[in-house]
Image 1: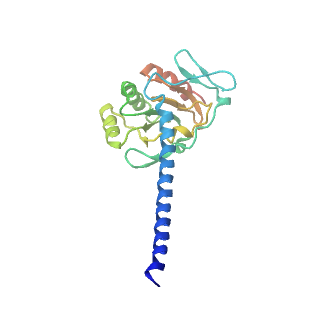
Image 2: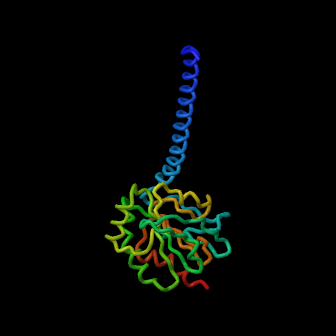
Image 3: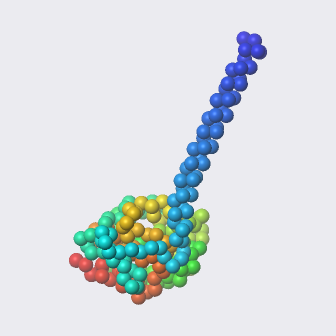
Amino acid sequence: MSAASRAPQRSNRAAQSSYRAARAVRARRRAALAAGAAAAALLLTACGDGGTSGGGGDTGFVTGTDGISTVPADKRVAAPDLSGETLEGEQLDVGDYKGKVVVLNVWGSWCNPCRAEAKYFAKVSKEYEGKDVQFVGINTRDGSTTAALAFEKDFGITYPSLYDPTGRLMIRFEKGTLNPQAIPSTLVLDREGRVAARSLTALDEERLRKMLEPVVAEK
C-alpha cells in the first residue's frame, strides 16, 4: 500500500478518535451539570432560617407556630431509602432501624446554625440511648470528611452520620411530603419508618424534645 493510500486511513482514525473523545467530554459535562443542579437546589435554602413549610390541604401535615410540622399516623409517608457510607467509612441503612424511633439531622460543619444546635443533639441522643431511639446524621456539602469528623469530636456527637456531600439523599424524598428543604433540617421517623415530624430550622433542647417525645410515646 502506498503512502498516499495510507494517509486517508490515518486521517479517518484520528477523526474517529477525536469524535469519541469529544463525546466522552460532553457526557462528563452532562453528569457534572446534573450533580450541580441537585446541589444547587439544596444550596438555595442552605444554612439559613429554613425553607418553606406548608401545611393543611391534601399535604397531610400541619405546621405549628413553633415551626415544627407534624402529621397524623394515618397520613404519614415512608421515608425513602437512606443508605450509604458513614463519615467513618462504614455502611449504614436507616431502614435497618425500623422498630425504633429515628431522629434524622441534616447538617454541615460549615453551617453556623448546625453548630448552634449540635450540643443539644449530643445531649438528647445520649439520654435516649437504649430506649429504642436512634439518632442519625446526614452530613452534606462538606468536601471531605475531615472537617465533619472534627465537628463531631468538638461537639461530642457519638451517633453515626451518612456522608452525602452532593445532597443525593435529600432529593430522594417525594415533593409535597415532609422532606428536608434546608440545612439544618431535622426529621423524626416513627417505628414504621414513616416521617412523623420535621423542623427546617436549628433546634434547641426544648424544641428537639417537643418533636421527639410524642413519637416515642406512640404505641
